[in-house]
Length: 161
Length: 131
Image 1: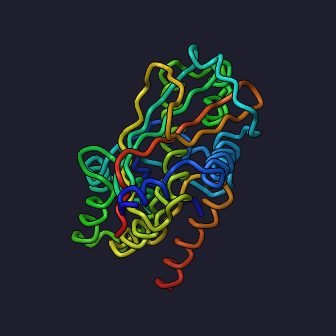
Image 2: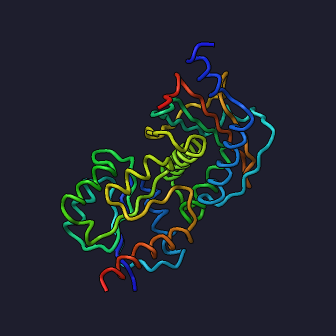
């Protein structure tokens, strides 16, 4: 097998990486967004109406991480992060909080998967909701209110240095 | 003793989070200044005296690395310690920021207690070296 293909094979989705994605994401949600998160079986019927954020990353590995949150999950997450009543948070603040959530999740997950790598994250951007496709790591978590789905897709061949 | 703090982060909600978490943790915050990038932070430091700087890395205009370099060049880090707070927990990045003069490096996610402990470690060490 050519070296590049071996590298892609090594970086392809597997149970270990998916488990790491779920556990690191749950830790982020519990520690900084003060909500319990439990891995659940995927059911993506709700994604079409979700709040979604994309983070492009580059460095030793390049690709994209994106997440989708059920609409009812957003106000309590923003409220908990900002320590404000849900009614006190503005639409802009809620958008900023889910972008920050995406930023933290992306950095924490990638650092956990590849602690020896170089990592550069672009600014998170709100996007139209989309589900994952081929060649992605993915997890779904049930929150105290609502749910979150997270996908990571690598593009290109990881650096080996 | 209440400490004056400068928080440097391009995310307004992250600055707000840090400010609240410091208070919640029991860390005594006096005046708290904010900046959304390194340039603004340098301007704030000309106007205000602070005891500790908390800075992100990924920021527009002047990122955390450039900001630390400027602080080092200007001699600011001799009197004001800087704590980096970032999502990037890769070894390369941590070692680089510490080599640039950061006194500590916290990775997100972090708890209020761990932030207080790190701030107390940094400020305690600084005060001890002055004594």
